[in-house]
Amino acid sequence: MTNLSKSATVTDTNEPAFEPSVRYLLRDGELVEYADAKLHVLSTTLKYGVGVFEGFRAYWSDEDQQLYAFRVADHMRRLIDSMRVVEIDGSRDIGVLSEQLLGLVRANELRGNLHMRAQVFVDSSDGKPEDTGPVSVFMAAIPMGNYFGASGLDVQISSWARLSDRSMPPRVKSIANYQNGRLAMLEARRNGYDAALLLTEDGHVAEGAGYNVFMVRQGRLCTPPATDSILEGITRDSVLHLARNVLGVDVDIRPIDRTELYSADEIFVCGSAAEINHVSSVDRTPIGDGTAGELTRQLQHAYRQAVVGRVAADQQWAQPVYPTA
Ligand SMILES: Cc1ncc(COP(=O)(O)O)c(C=O)c1O
Image (cartoon, helix red, strand yellow):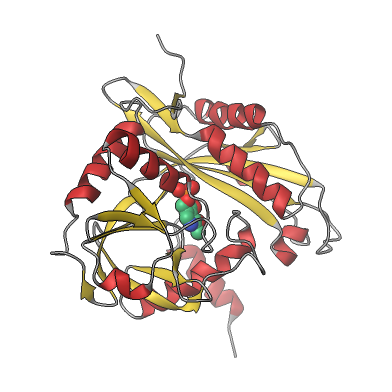
């Protein structure tokens, strides 16, 4: 018979109390203490996975003594697109949402590399799947270093197919979509890989669990089209821009077969959290010599410059969080 009181005591003794690394989160534009940012267990979001979110990064520059938030307005635009597609009510004001997020970072006085989130929940207490509101918007800004433990990823092509626009649109960052990538990651880890790539239902390369993919093959930089079951990544868009306008490299946006990956010269994955990380092998087939290829390294360098405002991009991508002197 299970001794509940004993196991509770053991857990209490062995587990250190959780110490959040920030004081505040934001709920509907108001600062709340970390421990008070809660959602009811019967909310539509928890029962049916109705919700959308965004993940952003901010980068600290020692040289400028400034924190730069990367493409915040573009992420907020995608958050609003996601709300529209999965039919969730709520604010559609990019400027207000962006300023709320930056205000949260300032309130926590964060000066270091960060990951930030905006999450839109359907917070109805009687929780029906077709509810579109009432809506709660939570935001968080938490210190974060590298997403992947490794530089250079051993990748498995998943046996799970990527979601499709005919079932659960991968174009949007819907919470429920992440079960698909989660299963792929668990399978990959179980099989000794670092990451997973998923194919579309008809066998083309789509993307990873939380990152888009590029390859260099026969001298051409290529990435799957937005219609091949991908999230239209903002880092993907930044890479396209940096390749074309900073490095002067053409990019082919076209369907990619699985076996093209096996004979690629370079492959990398990219995402706001994942940044740009090269792929060392696919299904144990080595890619190049296993280290980051020349173009991958040039793009990584350009991206690191862009996130702290050192690349003259068309848009104002890197936004100072603190007032400039
Ligand atoms: C499934 C998926 N694909 C791609 C990406 C990359 O998108 P972004 O560069 O906008 O972060 C993410 C990032 O969250 C993701 O979850």
